[in-house]
Length: 222
Image (cartoon, rainbow, N blue to C red):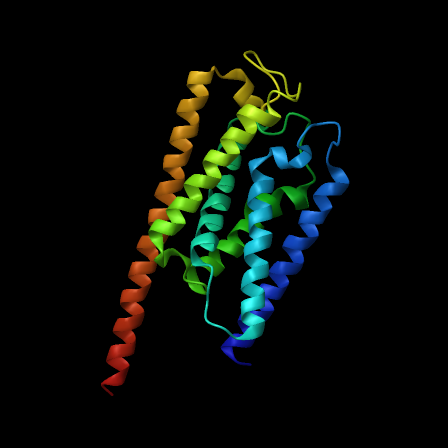
């Protein structure tokens, strides 16, 4: 089987999974909350992953050169942030992220580990997404700012749960225990973490390109 067919099958499997989990969210969400499940960064990451996977799969079917690198790399970083933040807070106290109780295990591990890993592997090894660094960084920052504005100015004021010591309505319980100054600090440090993830992906791309081209150049000598 050719390398292209392996990629096609991999992306098809990823597309089936991400599509299934994206639609599954509509069956378990609380429709009484404004913004429903789109209040959560995890669902933003899942939605972006659905778009990115679909575009890459179409490209594989058509046999065209890899495209959409800035958006795919930004989506990979967004999902890496989801994994990092979720498990960091979860191991401190699960109630910091799951105020209504633990979610079903297969959804928890797909949304916060397996799904993001599948996309990150594609971004690093197939799509080579991190080579367009400045466009990718711009998209990452725009997604972060949009999510913060969405949470602070739209869904937060229009919801009453979860309720914290300081405020209410923000999507994650720990945010409602923070003052606005503390939340700003948290948002800034989180965006800096995302930038670190992006530069790590870019460094990986440089190292991989160096060894790949070095191997190709050495092969041509023989």
